[in-house]
Length: 112
Length: 112
Image 1 (cartoon, chains in turn yellow, green):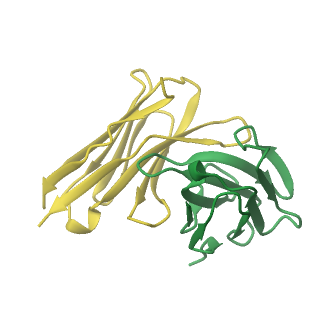
Image 2: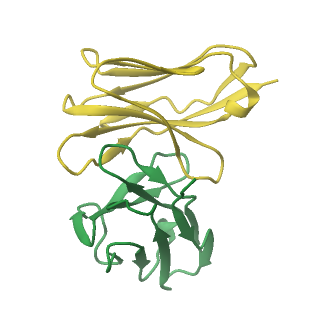
């Protein structure tokens, strides 16, 4: 079993819809939780990161962490065609090395 | 805005040949990472540097892969000899203090 599980999709929704992306993990030592967006043939771009449990909002994006369930989510409101990309969750343990463990990525398409 | 630079962007080589990738991190970032991303999967850490020192190379196939960051700034990742299974995107990331990692555009390697 992988440390971080993420449904690879693909996920296709109409423009304006609310999108929910999720990851589960098995390592309770993870402390930092991140979401990256990756366009085709590009490097990952950091969208948001949270520390421990709770919510964090940035514009149309909201990240949620539930450490008790080992479950994290990214919500995208008023989705736009430009949001079409692969979304990667990533996590790290505070051990001085900050090694990131990534999920498989969810491929998202927003249809105009 | 400062970015991580990588070259080349694309590399096609034949198996058993040597290849090298170069990365220039964001100025002032002491930590540098090399990741490998196979198509349809999330990035996996190969090696991590803190300044010029290797912090973690546990997932680096040392029989064929080598990495260096001689002056603690830019870095080179080498594969010799390349194998068919090495075809992937090779990503470099850098980080200031803290958990955020900033990725370059990657080098897409195809081994024929």
